[in-house]
Length: 279
Ligand SMILES: [Zn+2]
Image: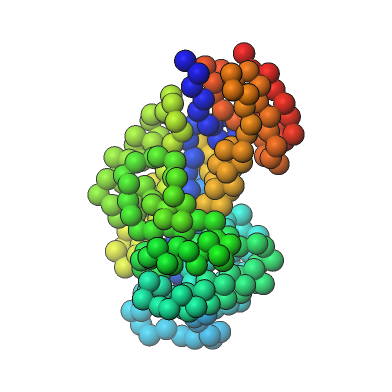
């Protein structure tokens, strides 16, 4: 049986990534929890509606966006990813395509200027989109865009511009899924646990313990790869660029990543530029 299954860096069969939206104050606390457990997150930012510096929010306001300065100091060189969430958080599918293009490209440009990186990730504001919006994303160099769909599974995504999550952090199945992910391991196709939410919800719902307990359960495990959305995307794209001879006796890695896979119950590691003979 010539079955080939992708493995993540280090030969791991499981990966975890998070995606949190809007660039709000509560991301500070979220990052400190995630950092304690070595978990990586992608933060989706609206660069057209930063809070002006020196703003004091009314008592009880839970959705508190960060200022531009605060955004840079929190996420820059943090090891987490920043990604597009549109310039001003509209329902993109309701706009003429040129306005969609402006919302995406201007946000991308601002984030690239602020962070000095190439920004290719995105999460849809409100989770809504249309086929026309997806076409604009393609034309704008966006590699993936997260929806609010929950699969309640760990399947590797295929439609990256309509990217579903495993679940939101308030999903009733979170605890069951977390236990399964930590205690079991796939023998065939690898698993990706993709969690999303807004950190202000932990304050609104008074449930910071939920993300602390999740992180404690799932963090710092040798058999899990912790990565941002774009790191996972880039690795999987590179895996798909591996070139095999038809009888699977030879593999060539034309990419810049060391790629891992299992073939006939053997584990392989192919370095960038390497040609390998398989058993
Ligand atoms: Zn949002």
